[in-house]
Length: 435
Image 1 (cartoon, one colour):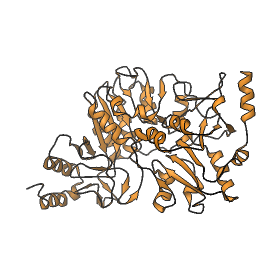
Image 2: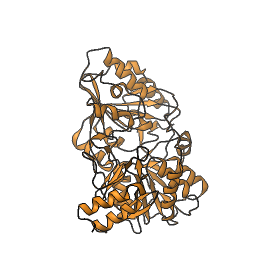
Image 3: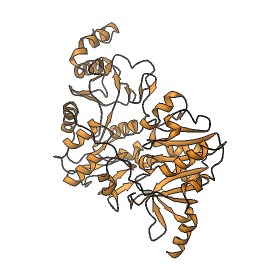
Image 4: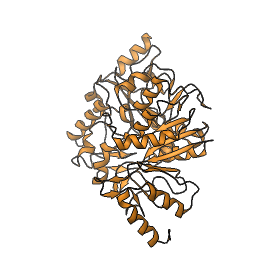
């Protein structure tokens, strides 16, 4: 232990001192959400602003800290972001042309990194070093392992508020090139307000879920409402991309015990955790939580090994074919594909599995139908017509998988907002889909 403490002490620097190592043309990698390193990135940005450094790229996903290179184009050409997801933190820059975006299935990210990128530095937030000289990568496994493999240097930001994940990635102090300490509170998602429509949709989905099912929930009011509606179920399991607050609720009330899973029985499997402090407290030193790399967790061939797998995700719009857009409003990028299709495919391949894409029936105060004859011009198709299973609005569930175009169209019109059903029928008849 004394040797580990000495190594730690030798590698400990301030963020400002570490920034002196930064060079033009560096490619820097970070994983997502709470695993990112705000102190290091702030120091790097300040160094760039006050020097002639240029051509620096920073790869990120699901950004939760306010990075200057995403906030405005003032540093364009000196330091730019490259987003693997185009979340709220990077959306403005991606659409403004001063950040780049990498289309991908989340499960493929580690492979794409290993095949296409080299990093001058990988920066990651970790929990304090244990007695064996290891740092836990805490809330995230995701694609960190791939970036570690492809990075020339590893810089860690130690935070005593980071949870220690027992069943997740670990870094030994001997692997680390520099250590920065920054004991800030972890970022949290603001609580989601569950309105009547979200609760209605959540209840509709929950009615379709059998005891003993294994679930994946996405981000937002509808997945959270579904989670709350599942509290009366029994023997549920969790195999999910993101570990959420509603999952903690289900574990604490006993609805989830992971006892019926075919793989990782007794364990909750995820690739990252993000939400409230309650989540971070729950995963800390908890041997029942396994935070594993996304190329395993999101692999449809792994997901489907659990029987009665259920995936629940959101969408922006759906057309008569059942094509799902979940990442753009026309040509404006809102997010990335994430793991939606990973879980749609995994659930549909599972014995007894089901996939649900859920959303409110209208947008912009009821002036736009989210069920459309065709996706909007420039809209990105996230889940294809061949993969889609169930579409859900507050007006019901359309079961599309294996159904003809005419059958799909009828079912979708039936769950559209009543104000738009006549217009949708007119368009369907005009196109020869309905007679």
